[in-house]
Image (cartoon, rainbow, N blue to C red; front, side, top):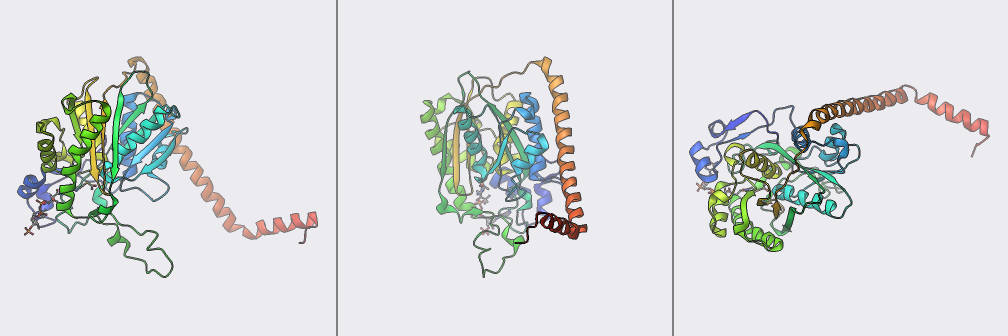
Length: 382
Ligand code: ACO
């Protein structure tokens, strides 16, 4: 995982909008969140998380077959954030794409990678959830700006002869709730002929109907976890941990009541990071592992919900191969060398294209004269 260093507390927020630490903590459970610096973006946070995931899995970037970035705050419409990260990692054998399913995006992306591995088409995939939500917030709307933060988390998935890993997944969407939560941008309708271009800055701000989203979330969490458990042939009693999307402590408490389980079956770290959208589940997963809450062969569940509306649950039998310590130091050096090579390769390719363009601009007439001379030589005057 990778989160920015800068912490924005509830007290800091109360200097920006009419709110208080007491209101935010009692209504959401959030105490503070991380804010990206000017130099940090969805891609740079995602890259750091990806490099750490490769380190933990002890594999080389060139071994990756697929990179998926789940995000609602991409660098561009295209090129994808995943393609940028692919090139910075030097993962030159990987396909790369972004996946848009808001806060359910990470669970969707893990399922896509799992399916590709299960068919035998690919062996290794990198799945990243990365967001810079604070760049798309309306800082005058106290109902939304207090909820979100920035960060990234990543996992490596690989084919294994050992039974386990992702046992089941339930992915759902109800686009009739598209008005309840969104980040509109200048889209195909706005760009149609005769349409006047909307105010881009206003268009990229998040809007949300908090009450309706709250009701939707509490309904779908329990329902979809039970569906995923059914598919895996398990019951809620088999789960040792649920890693939910970190939106609001009251949503998690209501879901626990609905499932008739103790609240501490749900892992919670939203108090320190707020809602980091597609990044919240992988960040929570990393901290759950660090705190010893997930052990080999445990059955755990992920559940995400958010804009679209979308929601998704997944049951996983946890198992991570332990790399040989012997290979670690050598592989670390190899990874560093690949990152350095990828960095300079990208820079040099872009520089050479810039120089080429410059030369073409300086000598356009020469190019035309050259073509004319060749046509004269061929006596081609048609
Ligand atoms: N500080 C102080 N007062 C506030 C604040 C604030 N930050 N925000 C709202 N209020 C006020 C309201 O103006 C309202 O005042 P009024 O009664 O005088 O009109 C009062 O507090 C109650 O407002 P509600 O909106 O009813 O408050 P609620 O208890 O529903 O909490 C919240 C609002 C926290 C947004 C809640 O609805 C929620 O968490 N909803 C789910 C949101 C969510 O998780 N979204 C993300 C989904 S994931 C994704 O895809 C992005």
